[in-house]
Length: 65
Image (cartoon, rainbow, N blue to C red; front, side, top):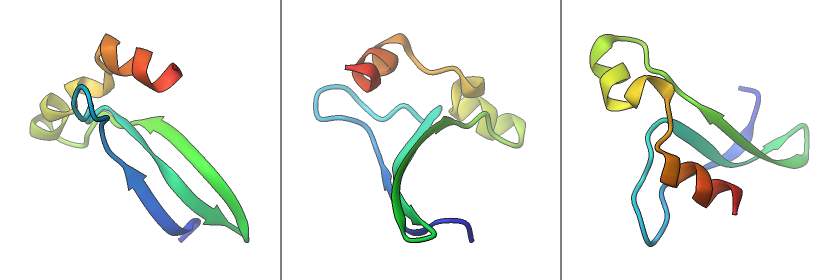
């Protein structure tokens, strides 16, 4: 495992959880880090659920603010 003490973040209080964006806090070699990335999914069902890795425009604005 690369990261220890991983805490994944979900959604915001005003909108919803965008499953295409994955982010959270963790520890890598004793250093606290924050990761933000996107997930496409591995099969068709998961790709549809995650919108083929494309975040919704409102979710992007929230993450960058």
